[in-house]
Image 1 (cartoon, rainbow, N blue to C red):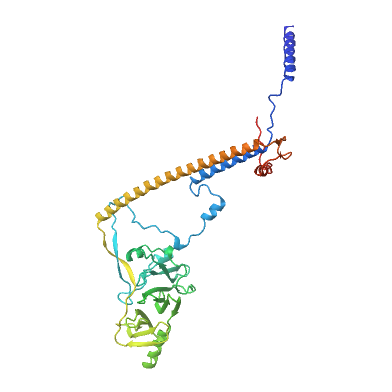
Image 2 (image 1 turned 60 degrees about the vertical axis):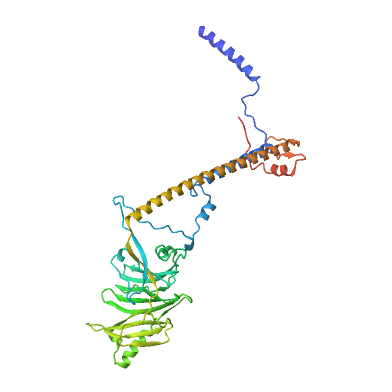
Length: 437
């Protein structure tokens, strides 16, 4: 009986509480905020201020950390070789060594003695597949020419090319050679051998011999042979930098064969013989001088000193007894001269370290000033935007307007509103409707 009484009492009070709640105002119901031109404009200004802040934050990040697709495409554009910055080479430091020997360099003549320059193919080319040879500079030291040897392991043969690197004239003669980098080279070679790899163990190399006195022409020798049989023949090439023409002067070999066939009845095609380019004639800069030798199995037979013009039109016999001729030596190269005093190197290192610390401190100070300047510009811009918003809201309040339930259901009508407000009222559908709980 007691339990039934308690249930009746609790049911009675529950009915009274529910009847009172039914007459209470709906305070817990969600209230939909009416979309007006004012609210739409304020939302637009809020988004624009947020974009300004994001733009400021993006400017403080690394370039690769926060990029749009257009910015990435612009940063990925190829840089011409002429505009590339090559860092200065620094000798490696070994923590176990207090001093690493460093050498000083000097300029010497390249083709000295005449005809002595040649390429040596070492076994390391089989692993590297490409080797750069010794370089020669023009007499006025404005360009550098160097040979490249390519190795094809499938047939164990080689090919060669000559490339040109423009030199930095603002540096000293030695520094412009030491700072020359293959990145700055002209991509198209001036001279190339055949790249025929059908014959096994065949080698072809292209070696610069010397420049002309005015630096407008270059002599090069192309050696063709076999690793198991020796050198077969040497071809004489000349390249004109003004006209960009190259010519294989085969006429000098034809003239030598013709002379010995008619004078001594010797057919050089049945023998083993070759030419050795020496350089430009010192007395006639437009002519080239070569020596010729025949191989008899014992001492080589001297076949004469010959001269030919750069166009291959006229070949002359200089001497049949004297292999020495007046040859100009015009090109230069850089060679090691002596070891630098360790005290000088240590002093330079300390000086460089001070300069590096000074530059880092300067860069850090400039970065801090730039960041402060950007922050001030952001605050100024946000203040201007806020002032513009306040003035625009005052203009809104001066004109009557009609409200609707939501901006999406019916457009907002503004009576006698200014032109800038009419423009903002035409795009409320693009913005979300704000609601508050």
